[in-house]
Amino acid sequence: MKRKVKKIRVGVFGARRGATMVSVMLQHPEAELSAICDYSKKSMQHCAELIKKHNARVVLYSDFDKFLEHDLDAIVLANFANEHAPYAVRALNSGRHVTSEVIACQNLAEAVALVEAVEKSRKVYTFAENYCYFKGTLEMQRLYQAGEIGQFLHAEGEYVHDCESIWPNITGGERNHWRNFCPATFYCTHSIGPIVTITGTRPTRVTGYETPNVVKRRFGCRSADGSVLLCQMSNGGTMKVLPWANFKRHPEAIWYAVYGTTGMMETDRWNDCYNRVHLFRENHPRYQRDLSYMPDFPVSTELSRRIGGHGGSDFYTMHYFLQRILGRPEGKHAIDVYQALDMTLPGLLGYRSIVNGNMAIEIPDFRDKKIRDQYRHDTWCCDPKLAGPGQPKYNWSGGEVKVPDSVYRKQKKQCPR
Image (cartoon, one colour):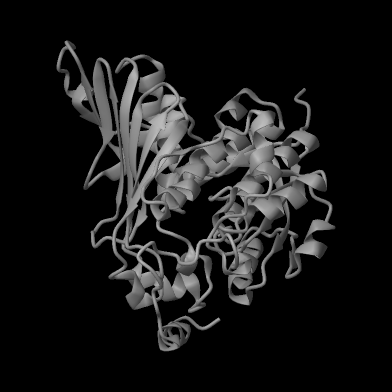
């Protein structure tokens, strides 16, 4: 007789991005979606429709304090990308497990607070960097761990997505929406995350460069159109990435390449994108499958095949979170808080490099408790709430990007809330 496993009671904070997480938790056999929180009536309406479709009983909140009082085991953070860490700390301190959408934090002080909240609470924290769970990136991780290309020497990652047409919908015409003020290096984990998980290394030093702001100012974004981060890795290898860049390209570019001592591998640049892997192995018979193929997900269930969202990868961020809480072997595939910071900090420090003349900056490893004290009060970032002495003056190293209010008024009309 099989022992009945108690379901994990889950709450989702952030109904817009969290809609996919809501869908997973409504259907996952080991989860019980209990509550959702968001201030947006429009986003909550969509979630209410999902709840009705699955005939579930879920309490809806517009106040996070009241949401946090709900009887929950775990919380999914899908709120604004620059506000994840403070809510994660609150949730962990309340005794809940947490999985956080990207980015992990917006400054180094938040990074210290986050790590210490995880360690003190002894609760599970996982990072929902879904690009680590594409078919292609999972296969590249398997190939690397199997020794197929030898020792890691160099890697590249790109996330190029022209968002101009959808900007009104994803910012609501708000001048101080995080997408309008964060520097071009900020949204970096889609580019860096897969390289960190594939190779098992971490960035130790970063240098940043950025383009002018030409296109983005048209739709209200005040950072550079794009940027480049160059990193030294912990094994001595190198990495070059493009964090989210608003370059004109269709379809969007999600691409990774890893070079080793005996070969290289990369995802597709065009048609099949992250679903196809190209592989070269030195002195190996050239079978067709060795050159270019479409891998399958290593774990596939009826539910994972039903869940959409980012090539099916959204399912795995939630599934592995639940497995980590339950202490299952599959939970080892979840991304912990330390790797979350390995993926996040290069973007935060990359902009600091840029405004300091592209100087190389060491990336701290907060696994080491002795290192944390020097960053405990380091709130350096572009958030307008922290504007003032010691903070970066502008979102772009070229100076102030002046955007008239009419741009944001027009966008608000295009996307009423």
